[in-house]
Image: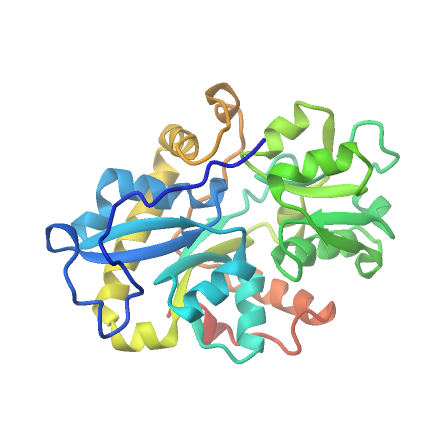
Length: 317
């Protein structure tokens, strides 16, 4: 199943990154043009829903959403100024910080359900696979959409927590929509798949062997919306406006799951009857610092980052 490329929802003439030089320039109807990079998965439904509900316009923002493949793309996009803000997973931001990049979350984005029975992300195998549990993943080849991010880090942690050796896994990069095909052809032994692609995979011969996010921490925040330290310093009003609109969007999404499902259908090709069945994440405005610390410690353990992340510098105040 392929993704629909997300066109800019609002047409902005000459829209660039929100630097001190151009952030004050009016866009449509005097609004400030803002571009956000976002991977087209269920995690970012509040962003699309908030745009549709007019929450960003209420804050004076003329919002444009650009499709990306993951946090590894979001970070250079924000650093280069291609995006004013982007959705990125927490490990990708920890890696960026470890490399000396000045990036900071301005709002949360998505959180695990915390359930060991059903989450919006899971490690799946084909139904006839000999792999039955997380510990059976030892020594196996597993896919994630990007490497050295929250996918491989949380899967290794889940295997360790189950009593196995998470360091023994080999990871390859496969986009979520292509992961089931890679399983079917035997290119990989297991795959990390997120909604809205997880439910179709389960309906077509796959089964879950690990709810890796929930098994890492019941309140694990998967990612959020971030920008550079310079934008935060030089354009505080813009950052505050974006954060206010985004937090309003998160709260609205948590309270209106049916509308979240509808929103996901506007930027993916998932049929409506499948969208009705997918598991949604939790949408909260606050980060869980304990969960972030657990994830940071795991990233250090597996060599993804060299030292414990500075959560004060990384997370919103």
